[in-house]
Every structure is written in C-alpha cells, then in structure tokens.
Image (cartoon, rainbow, N blue to C red; front, side, top):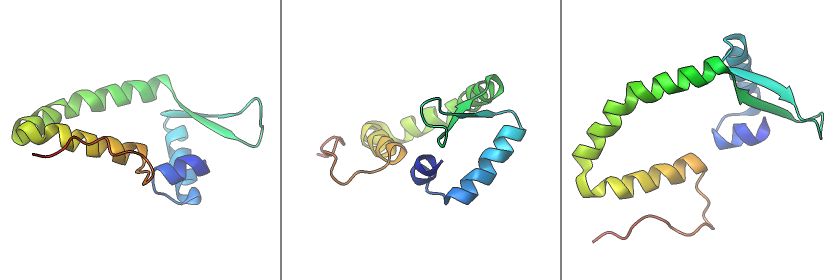
Length: 100
C-alpha cells in the first residue's frame, strides 16, 4: 500500500480508505502476498476491468481531440504524460523528443 500511495501521491491512510471503497464496490480485490503475509496486493476485479474499459472508451474522443489540437507537439505531450504516470525520476534519462 505504501508503494501505491507514493505512486499516486496520497498518504497511506487516505489510500487505504479509497481502496476500501473500491473493494466494497467490487472494483479491486485485496490479497495477501504468499511470500510475505505483511504485504497486500491489490488487483483489478472483473468488474474493475470492465469499468476501466468503459472509461477508456468514454475518453477516447478526448484523446483524439487533444492529438488533433496539439499536432506535432502530441509526441512531446504524451512523453511528459508517461513520465508523470510512471513517476518522474530525476536520475532517469529524458525520453522526451527534442524540440525544434
């Protein structure tokens, strides 16, 4: 839970409450790690996968629209979004394309 909390910029207690609500809604399942019973693993349920697919489909037009608006800058924008999604590591090499 601490790894996930760090990745999504939430404090662990706040994330726990969010995960509890997601478990209650049957969007995720909480499992104990077989190797380390202190660790908790969070996985998408079938309902969570369907919800994610529906969200992706619902936002497809938005992604298409921003690609159209950004034109050639879309590659840079998507590289920056990837860095944010993966957690910006100052030691990591810059993968964003050079600007002309």
